Length: 81
Image (cartoon, rainbow, N blue to C red):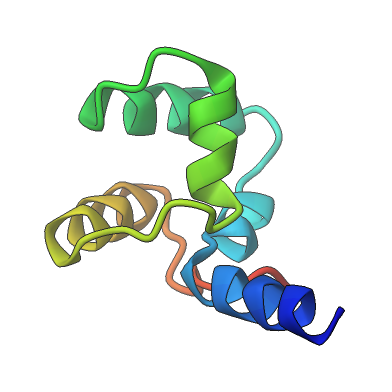
């Protein structure tokens, strides 16, 4: 049980849920489409795995995610809050 808690903490560090929840509801599908195109993701599940922090982004992927959020005026991106 303690191990599972640690995994959740690690995942929260790489989650961009905070930024996604800051988007207006009308912007979320557009944002999701941009991320999916940028990383060649084929399914919504693969997008949500990244959003939740299940996939740890490389430095270049982190920069891409941040640049897409920047277009929407979102600067507080990382974390699951």
